[in-house]
Image 1 (cartoon, rainbow, N blue to C red):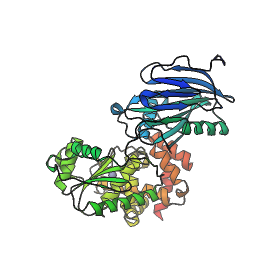
Image 2 (cartoon, protein in one colour):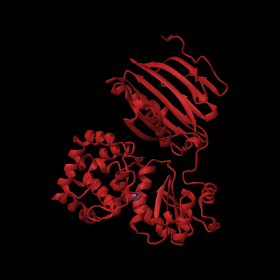
Image 3 (tube, helix red, strand yellow):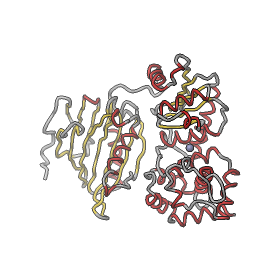
Image 4 (cartoon, rainbow, N blue to C red):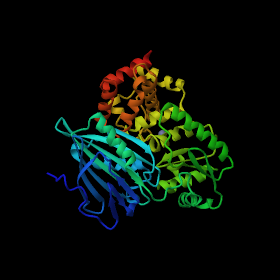
Length: 445
Ligand SMILES: [Zn+2]
Protein backbone atom coordinates (compact mmCIF):
# COMPACT_ATOMS: atom_id res chain seq x y z
CA UNK A 1 0.00 0.00 0.00
CA UNK A 2 1.01 3.63 -0.31
CA UNK A 3 2.41 5.58 2.54
CA UNK A 4 0.08 8.35 3.64
CA UNK A 5 3.06 10.40 4.71
CA UNK A 6 4.52 10.68 1.27
CA UNK A 7 2.71 13.82 0.21
CA UNK A 8 5.12 15.31 -2.32
CA UNK A 9 6.09 13.84 -5.69
CA UNK A 10 9.29 11.87 -5.63
CA UNK A 11 10.76 13.41 -8.72
CA UNK A 12 10.73 16.94 -10.04
CA UNK A 13 11.88 17.09 -13.61
CA UNK A 14 13.35 20.18 -15.29
CA UNK A 15 10.15 20.97 -17.14
CA UNK A 16 7.99 20.63 -14.07
CA UNK A 17 7.75 22.70 -10.95
CA UNK A 18 5.61 21.78 -7.97
CA UNK A 19 4.35 23.70 -4.97
CA UNK A 20 1.33 23.40 -2.69
CA UNK A 21 -0.66 20.98 -4.80
CA UNK A 22 0.18 22.79 -8.04
CA UNK A 23 2.08 21.09 -10.83
CA UNK A 24 3.38 23.02 -13.79
CA UNK A 25 4.32 21.42 -17.09
CA UNK A 26 6.21 24.16 -18.82
CA UNK A 27 6.80 22.36 -22.10
CA UNK A 28 3.03 22.26 -22.67
CA UNK A 29 2.09 25.45 -20.74
CA UNK A 30 -0.21 23.34 -18.58
CA UNK A 31 -0.88 23.63 -14.89
CA UNK A 32 -2.61 21.08 -12.65
CA UNK A 33 -4.02 22.21 -9.31
CA UNK A 34 -5.15 19.35 -7.11
CA UNK A 35 -8.33 19.83 -5.08
CA UNK A 36 -7.92 20.60 -1.35
CA UNK A 37 -10.13 17.63 -0.45
CA UNK A 38 -7.69 15.23 -2.09
CA UNK A 39 -5.12 13.42 0.03
CA UNK A 40 -2.22 12.73 -2.26
CA UNK A 41 -0.39 9.52 -1.48
CA UNK A 42 1.95 9.23 -4.41
CA UNK A 43 3.08 11.21 -7.41
CA UNK A 44 5.81 10.57 -9.91
CA UNK A 45 6.97 11.62 -13.34
CA UNK A 46 5.49 9.41 -16.01
CA UNK A 47 7.46 6.84 -17.89
CA UNK A 48 7.90 7.72 -21.53
CA UNK A 49 7.36 10.52 -23.97
CA UNK A 50 3.58 10.50 -23.81
CA UNK A 51 2.97 9.98 -20.10
CA UNK A 52 4.05 13.18 -18.33
CA UNK A 53 3.02 12.45 -14.77
CA UNK A 54 1.06 10.09 -12.50
CA UNK A 55 -0.67 10.69 -9.19
CA UNK A 56 -2.47 8.50 -6.66
CA UNK A 57 -4.69 9.87 -3.95
CA UNK A 58 -7.82 9.46 -1.90
CA UNK A 59 -10.92 11.58 -1.61
CA UNK A 60 -13.33 10.48 1.12
CA UNK A 61 -13.71 6.75 0.53
CA UNK A 62 -12.57 6.78 -3.07
CA UNK A 63 -9.20 5.99 -4.56
CA UNK A 64 -8.18 8.24 -7.44
CA UNK A 65 -5.53 7.26 -9.99
CA UNK A 66 -4.61 10.17 -12.19
CA UNK A 67 -2.25 10.78 -15.09
CA UNK A 68 -1.37 13.37 -17.71
CA UNK A 69 -0.77 12.28 -21.32
CA UNK A 70 0.21 14.04 -24.54
CA UNK A 71 0.20 12.97 -28.19
CA UNK A 72 1.36 14.81 -31.33
CA UNK A 73 -1.48 16.72 -33.04
CA UNK A 74 -0.17 16.65 -36.58
CA UNK A 75 0.45 12.94 -36.64
CA UNK A 76 -3.07 12.17 -35.34
CA UNK A 77 -4.89 14.95 -37.19
CA UNK A 78 -6.21 16.74 -34.11
CA UNK A 79 -7.83 20.11 -34.68
CA UNK A 80 -10.47 20.10 -31.99
CA UNK A 81 -10.54 18.86 -28.37
CA UNK A 82 -13.20 16.36 -29.51
CA UNK A 83 -10.55 14.83 -31.81
CA UNK A 84 -8.51 14.10 -28.68
CA UNK A 85 -11.35 12.37 -26.83
CA UNK A 86 -12.26 10.54 -30.05
CA UNK A 87 -8.70 9.20 -30.14
CA UNK A 88 -9.10 7.75 -26.64
CA UNK A 89 -12.31 5.98 -27.72
CA UNK A 90 -10.64 4.81 -30.93
CA UNK A 91 -7.73 3.27 -29.03
CA UNK A 92 -10.10 1.37 -26.76
CA UNK A 93 -12.05 0.00 -29.70
CA UNK A 94 -8.82 -1.55 -30.96
CA UNK A 95 -9.05 -4.03 -28.08
CA UNK A 96 -11.23 -7.00 -28.88
CA UNK A 97 -13.17 -6.87 -25.60
CA UNK A 98 -14.01 -3.17 -26.10
CA UNK A 99 -14.75 -3.11 -29.81
CA UNK A 100 -18.17 -1.48 -29.32
CA UNK A 101 -16.78 1.02 -26.82
CA UNK A 102 -18.36 4.42 -26.42
CA UNK A 103 -18.36 7.03 -23.67
CA UNK A 104 -21.25 7.14 -21.23
CA UNK A 105 -20.95 10.89 -21.19
CA UNK A 106 -19.08 13.40 -23.32
CA UNK A 107 -19.55 17.16 -23.27
CA UNK A 108 -17.64 20.37 -24.02
CA UNK A 109 -16.56 22.81 -21.30
CA UNK A 110 -15.63 26.42 -21.95
CA UNK A 111 -12.51 27.75 -20.28
CA UNK A 112 -8.72 28.05 -20.52
CA UNK A 113 -8.14 24.43 -21.45
CA UNK A 114 -5.87 24.97 -24.40
CA UNK A 115 -4.97 26.80 -27.53
CA UNK A 116 -8.67 26.50 -28.40
CA UNK A 117 -10.34 27.83 -25.27
CA UNK A 118 -12.50 24.83 -24.45
CA UNK A 119 -12.08 21.20 -23.48
CA UNK A 120 -14.04 17.97 -23.46
CA UNK A 121 -14.96 15.89 -20.42
CA UNK A 122 -15.84 12.25 -21.03
CA UNK A 123 -16.43 9.27 -18.76
CA UNK A 124 -17.14 5.54 -18.82
CA UNK A 125 -17.35 2.55 -16.52
CA UNK A 126 -14.77 -0.19 -16.01
CA UNK A 127 -16.22 -3.64 -15.39
CA UNK A 128 -15.09 -6.93 -13.99
CA UNK A 129 -17.61 -9.22 -15.65
CA UNK A 130 -20.88 -7.45 -14.93
CA UNK A 131 -19.64 -5.70 -11.80
CA UNK A 132 -18.70 -2.08 -12.16
CA UNK A 133 -15.40 -1.57 -10.42
CA UNK A 134 -14.56 2.03 -11.25
CA UNK A 135 -15.39 5.07 -13.36
CA UNK A 136 -12.85 6.64 -15.70
CA UNK A 137 -12.93 10.35 -16.51
CA UNK A 138 -10.88 12.32 -18.97
CA UNK A 139 -10.42 15.99 -19.68
CA UNK A 140 -9.14 16.51 -23.23
CA UNK A 141 -7.66 19.67 -24.73
CA UNK A 142 -5.17 21.00 -27.26
CA UNK A 143 -1.84 22.75 -26.85
CA UNK A 144 -0.22 24.25 -30.00
CA UNK A 145 1.62 21.00 -30.79
CA UNK A 146 -0.09 18.34 -28.72
CA UNK A 147 -3.41 16.86 -27.78
CA UNK A 148 -3.49 16.19 -24.05
CA UNK A 149 -5.65 14.14 -21.72
CA UNK A 150 -5.82 14.37 -17.97
CA UNK A 151 -7.17 10.99 -16.85
CA UNK A 152 -8.78 10.12 -13.56
CA UNK A 153 -9.94 6.68 -12.51
CA UNK A 154 -12.20 6.58 -9.43
CA UNK A 155 -12.49 3.29 -7.46
CA UNK A 156 -15.13 2.25 -6.61
CA UNK A 157 -17.49 4.06 -9.00
CA UNK A 158 -18.21 7.45 -7.39
CA UNK A 159 -21.34 8.46 -5.50
CA UNK A 160 -23.26 11.34 -7.00
CA UNK A 161 -21.56 13.75 -4.62
CA UNK A 162 -18.09 12.44 -5.43
CA UNK A 163 -18.87 12.56 -9.13
CA UNK A 164 -19.79 16.23 -8.82
CA UNK A 165 -16.51 17.02 -7.02
CA UNK A 166 -14.51 15.15 -9.66
CA UNK A 167 -16.19 16.95 -12.55
CA UNK A 168 -15.74 20.27 -10.77
CA UNK A 169 -12.04 19.50 -10.33
CA UNK A 170 -11.69 18.66 -14.03
CA UNK A 171 -13.44 21.90 -14.93
CA UNK A 172 -11.23 24.08 -12.72
CA UNK A 173 -8.04 22.19 -11.85
CA UNK A 174 -6.39 21.96 -15.25
CA UNK A 175 -5.44 25.09 -17.14
CA UNK A 176 -3.42 26.20 -20.13
CA UNK A 177 -1.47 29.49 -19.96
CA UNK A 178 0.07 29.56 -23.46
CA UNK A 179 -1.03 31.42 -26.55
CA UNK A 180 -4.66 31.05 -27.62
CA UNK A 181 -5.60 30.65 -31.30
CA UNK A 182 -7.78 33.17 -33.09
CA UNK A 183 -11.06 31.30 -33.49
CA UNK A 184 -12.01 33.63 -36.34
CA UNK A 185 -8.80 32.70 -38.19
CA UNK A 186 -5.90 35.16 -38.61
CA UNK A 187 -5.47 36.62 -42.09
CA UNK A 188 -2.23 34.70 -42.40
CA UNK A 189 -3.86 31.41 -41.42
CA UNK A 190 -6.77 31.98 -43.83
CA UNK A 191 -4.40 32.77 -46.68
CA UNK A 192 -2.29 29.72 -45.97
CA UNK A 193 -5.37 27.51 -46.08
CA UNK A 194 -6.44 29.03 -49.40
CA UNK A 195 -2.96 28.68 -50.88
CA UNK A 196 -2.81 25.06 -49.81
CA UNK A 197 -6.18 23.97 -51.20
CA UNK A 198 -7.21 26.31 -54.02
CA UNK A 199 -7.29 25.24 -57.69
CA UNK A 200 -4.14 26.32 -59.52
CA UNK A 201 -5.52 29.06 -61.73
CA UNK A 202 -7.30 30.94 -58.95
CA UNK A 203 -4.34 32.76 -57.46
CA UNK A 204 -5.09 36.27 -56.30
CA UNK A 205 -8.88 36.26 -56.68
CA UNK A 206 -9.72 35.44 -53.11
CA UNK A 207 -12.23 37.17 -50.85
CA UNK A 208 -12.57 36.06 -47.26
CA UNK A 209 -15.90 36.66 -45.52
CA UNK A 210 -16.68 35.87 -41.91
CA UNK A 211 -20.08 35.25 -40.35
CA UNK A 212 -20.96 34.15 -36.83
CA UNK A 213 -20.18 30.49 -37.59
CA UNK A 214 -18.43 30.35 -40.97
CA UNK A 215 -15.36 31.62 -42.75
CA UNK A 216 -16.08 31.76 -46.47
CA UNK A 217 -13.31 31.55 -49.04
CA UNK A 218 -14.64 32.72 -52.38
CA UNK A 219 -13.90 34.21 -55.77
CA UNK A 220 -17.62 34.73 -56.42
CA UNK A 221 -19.28 38.14 -56.24
CA UNK A 222 -22.27 36.50 -54.55
CA UNK A 223 -20.37 35.55 -51.42
CA UNK A 224 -22.33 37.86 -49.12
CA UNK A 225 -25.72 36.57 -50.14
CA UNK A 226 -24.46 33.02 -49.89
CA UNK A 227 -22.98 33.66 -46.43
CA UNK A 228 -26.39 34.82 -45.23
CA UNK A 229 -27.99 31.66 -46.56
CA UNK A 230 -25.39 29.51 -44.78
CA UNK A 231 -26.23 31.17 -41.47
CA UNK A 232 -29.89 30.44 -42.20
CA UNK A 233 -29.02 26.77 -42.77
CA UNK A 234 -27.07 26.72 -39.51
CA UNK A 235 -30.07 28.01 -37.53
CA UNK A 236 -32.51 25.53 -39.09
CA UNK A 237 -30.14 22.63 -38.45
CA UNK A 238 -29.55 23.70 -34.85
CA UNK A 239 -33.29 23.97 -34.31
CA UNK A 240 -33.90 20.45 -35.64
CA UNK A 241 -30.84 18.81 -34.04
CA UNK A 242 -30.06 20.90 -30.97
CA UNK A 243 -26.42 21.41 -29.96
CA UNK A 244 -24.88 23.97 -27.62
CA UNK A 245 -23.02 27.04 -28.78
CA UNK A 246 -19.51 26.63 -27.36
CA UNK A 247 -17.41 29.77 -27.21
CA UNK A 248 -13.99 29.20 -28.70
CA UNK A 249 -14.92 26.91 -31.55
CA UNK A 250 -13.23 27.81 -34.82
CA UNK A 251 -15.32 29.19 -37.65
CA UNK A 252 -16.10 26.39 -40.10
CA UNK A 253 -14.52 26.81 -43.53
CA UNK A 254 -16.67 27.02 -46.66
CA UNK A 255 -15.23 27.22 -50.19
CA UNK A 256 -17.57 28.90 -52.64
CA UNK A 257 -16.32 28.89 -56.24
CA UNK A 258 -17.62 31.09 -59.01
CA UNK A 259 -17.88 28.30 -61.57
CA UNK A 260 -18.54 24.60 -61.64
CA UNK A 261 -15.20 23.89 -63.32
CA UNK A 262 -13.28 25.61 -60.52
CA UNK A 263 -15.18 23.48 -58.02
CA UNK A 264 -14.45 20.30 -59.98
CA UNK A 265 -10.72 21.20 -60.05
CA UNK A 266 -10.71 21.81 -56.31
CA UNK A 267 -12.52 18.58 -55.45
CA UNK A 268 -10.47 16.40 -57.81
CA UNK A 269 -7.23 17.84 -56.42
CA UNK A 270 -8.02 17.66 -52.69
CA UNK A 271 -9.66 14.22 -52.75
CA UNK A 272 -7.38 12.70 -55.36
CA UNK A 273 -10.32 11.64 -57.52
CA UNK A 274 -10.99 11.99 -61.25
CA UNK A 275 -12.67 15.12 -62.59
CA UNK A 276 -15.49 12.90 -63.86
CA UNK A 277 -16.37 11.72 -60.36
CA UNK A 278 -15.93 15.22 -58.97
CA UNK A 279 -18.38 16.51 -61.59
CA UNK A 280 -21.12 14.22 -60.22
CA UNK A 281 -21.54 16.42 -57.16
CA UNK A 282 -22.69 19.94 -56.67
CA UNK A 283 -21.12 20.31 -53.29
CA UNK A 284 -19.50 18.15 -50.64
CA UNK A 285 -18.70 18.33 -46.94
CA UNK A 286 -15.54 16.54 -45.87
CA UNK A 287 -13.21 16.87 -42.87
CA UNK A 288 -13.86 20.39 -41.54
CA UNK A 289 -15.05 22.10 -44.75
CA UNK A 290 -17.91 22.47 -47.18
CA UNK A 291 -17.11 23.22 -50.84
CA UNK A 292 -19.54 24.16 -53.61
CA UNK A 293 -19.99 26.57 -56.52
CA UNK A 294 -22.35 29.42 -57.05
CA UNK A 295 -25.60 28.50 -58.69
CA UNK A 296 -28.58 29.25 -56.50
CA UNK A 297 -28.09 30.14 -52.83
CA UNK A 298 -31.31 28.29 -51.95
CA UNK A 299 -30.37 25.05 -53.68
CA UNK A 300 -31.18 22.20 -51.22
CA UNK A 301 -27.65 20.85 -51.67
CA UNK A 302 -26.37 23.59 -49.32
CA UNK A 303 -28.47 22.65 -46.32
CA UNK A 304 -27.88 18.96 -47.01
CA UNK A 305 -24.09 19.38 -46.97
CA UNK A 306 -24.21 21.94 -44.14
CA UNK A 307 -25.94 19.21 -42.09
CA UNK A 308 -23.09 16.78 -42.81
CA UNK A 309 -20.56 19.45 -41.83
CA UNK A 310 -22.37 20.18 -38.56
CA UNK A 311 -22.88 16.52 -37.65
CA UNK A 312 -19.18 15.97 -38.08
CA UNK A 313 -17.78 19.22 -36.63
CA UNK A 314 -20.34 20.40 -34.09
CA UNK A 315 -22.58 17.54 -33.01
CA UNK A 316 -19.67 15.14 -33.44
CA UNK A 317 -22.05 12.36 -34.45
CA UNK A 318 -20.35 10.82 -37.48
CA UNK A 319 -21.39 7.23 -36.86
CA UNK A 320 -24.49 5.11 -37.21
CA UNK A 321 -23.98 4.35 -40.88
CA UNK A 322 -24.62 5.94 -44.26
CA UNK A 323 -28.41 5.58 -43.70
CA UNK A 324 -28.16 7.72 -40.56
CA UNK A 325 -25.90 10.41 -42.02
CA UNK A 326 -27.88 10.77 -45.25
CA UNK A 327 -31.15 10.51 -43.34
CA UNK A 328 -30.44 13.52 -41.13
CA UNK A 329 -29.17 15.53 -44.13
CA UNK A 330 -32.18 14.60 -46.28
CA UNK A 331 -34.56 15.51 -43.49
CA UNK A 332 -33.24 19.07 -43.89
CA UNK A 333 -33.17 19.17 -47.69
CA UNK A 334 -36.47 17.47 -48.64
CA UNK A 335 -40.10 18.35 -47.97
CA UNK A 336 -42.52 16.30 -45.92
CA UNK A 337 -44.46 15.53 -49.10
CA UNK A 338 -41.39 14.22 -50.87
CA UNK A 339 -40.68 11.90 -47.95
CA UNK A 340 -44.30 10.82 -47.75
CA UNK A 341 -44.35 10.13 -51.49
CA UNK A 342 -41.81 7.37 -51.05
CA UNK A 343 -42.55 6.13 -47.55
CA UNK A 344 -46.30 5.66 -47.71
CA UNK A 345 -46.02 3.51 -50.80
CA UNK A 346 -43.01 1.64 -49.38
CA UNK A 347 -44.79 0.88 -46.11
CA UNK A 348 -48.04 -0.19 -47.76
CA UNK A 349 -46.51 -2.40 -50.44
CA UNK A 350 -43.47 -3.51 -48.38
CA UNK A 351 -41.32 -2.15 -51.18
CA UNK A 352 -38.26 -1.11 -49.16
CA UNK A 353 -34.97 -2.56 -47.91
CA UNK A 354 -35.32 -4.37 -44.56
CA UNK A 355 -33.57 -2.33 -41.86
CA UNK A 356 -31.03 -4.98 -40.94
CA UNK A 357 -29.82 -4.97 -44.54
CA UNK A 358 -30.28 -1.23 -45.02
CA UNK A 359 -28.23 -0.19 -41.97
CA UNK A 360 -25.05 -1.88 -43.24
CA UNK A 361 -24.97 -0.36 -46.75
CA UNK A 362 -21.58 1.41 -46.67
CA UNK A 363 -22.67 4.20 -49.03
CA UNK A 364 -26.26 4.90 -50.05
CA UNK A 365 -24.94 6.85 -53.02
CA UNK A 366 -22.60 4.09 -54.13
CA UNK A 367 -25.42 1.53 -54.06
CA UNK A 368 -26.13 1.76 -57.79
CA UNK A 369 -28.38 -0.42 -59.91
CA UNK A 370 -32.12 -0.90 -60.09
CA UNK A 371 -34.76 -2.37 -57.82
CA UNK A 372 -37.02 -5.19 -59.01
CA UNK A 373 -39.58 -2.63 -60.09
CA UNK A 374 -36.96 -0.70 -62.08
CA UNK A 375 -36.37 2.20 -59.69
CA UNK A 376 -32.95 3.70 -59.04
CA UNK A 377 -31.61 2.06 -55.86
CA UNK A 378 -29.65 5.02 -54.52
CA UNK A 379 -32.62 7.42 -54.97
CA UNK A 380 -34.81 5.02 -53.01
CA UNK A 381 -32.11 4.63 -50.38
CA UNK A 382 -32.02 8.38 -49.73
CA UNK A 383 -35.80 8.52 -49.49
CA UNK A 384 -35.90 5.58 -47.10
CA UNK A 385 -33.17 7.09 -44.92
CA UNK A 386 -35.02 10.42 -44.73
CA UNK A 387 -38.29 8.66 -43.87
CA UNK A 388 -36.65 6.81 -40.94
CA UNK A 389 -35.24 10.00 -39.40
CA UNK A 390 -38.55 11.78 -40.08
CA UNK A 391 -40.37 8.93 -38.28
CA UNK A 392 -38.03 9.10 -35.27
CA UNK A 393 -38.40 12.86 -35.03
CA UNK A 394 -42.11 13.30 -35.69
CA UNK A 395 -43.99 10.11 -34.80
CA UNK A 396 -45.69 9.68 -31.47
CA UNK A 397 -43.51 6.63 -30.97
CA UNK A 398 -40.21 8.40 -31.61
CA UNK A 399 -40.32 12.09 -30.91
CA UNK A 400 -39.96 12.23 -27.12
CA UNK A 401 -36.68 10.38 -27.20
CA UNK A 402 -35.42 11.73 -30.52
CA UNK A 403 -32.41 13.55 -28.99
CA UNK A 404 -31.33 10.37 -27.17
CA UNK A 405 -31.81 8.40 -30.40
CA UNK A 406 -29.52 10.82 -32.31
CA UNK A 407 -26.88 10.76 -29.62
CA UNK A 408 -26.90 6.97 -29.19
CA UNK A 409 -27.01 5.95 -32.85
CA UNK A 410 -24.73 8.76 -34.08
CA UNK A 411 -21.93 7.52 -31.82
CA UNK A 412 -22.08 3.92 -32.98
CA UNK A 413 -19.22 2.82 -35.17
CA UNK A 414 -20.48 2.69 -38.78
CA UNK A 415 -21.49 -0.72 -40.03
CA UNK A 416 -21.93 -2.19 -36.53
CA UNK A 417 -25.60 -3.12 -36.86
CA UNK A 418 -25.63 -5.01 -33.52
CA UNK A 419 -24.54 -1.83 -31.77
CA UNK A 420 -27.20 0.19 -33.65
CA UNK A 421 -29.80 -2.32 -32.52
CA UNK A 422 -28.53 -2.14 -28.93
CA UNK A 423 -28.75 1.67 -29.07
CA UNK A 424 -32.32 1.55 -30.40
CA UNK A 425 -33.23 -1.06 -27.79
CA UNK A 426 -31.79 1.17 -25.09
CA UNK A 427 -33.62 4.31 -26.24
CA UNK A 428 -36.94 2.95 -27.52
CA UNK A 429 -37.13 -0.43 -25.81
CA UNK A 430 -37.71 -2.33 -29.08
CA UNK A 431 -35.42 -4.45 -31.25
CA UNK A 432 -34.73 -3.70 -34.91
CA UNK A 433 -37.76 -5.68 -36.09
CA UNK A 434 -39.94 -3.77 -33.62
CA UNK A 435 -38.48 -0.43 -34.76
CA UNK A 436 -39.12 -1.30 -38.40
CA UNK A 437 -42.70 -2.34 -37.58
CA UNK A 438 -43.31 1.03 -35.88
CA UNK A 439 -41.91 2.82 -38.97
CA UNK A 440 -44.30 0.84 -41.23
CA UNK A 441 -47.22 1.66 -38.94
CA UNK A 442 -46.40 5.38 -38.98
CA UNK A 443 -46.20 5.70 -42.76
CA UNK A 444 -48.94 3.23 -43.72
CA UNK A 445 -51.70 5.43 -42.37
ZN1 LIG B 1 -25.13 13.48 -48.23
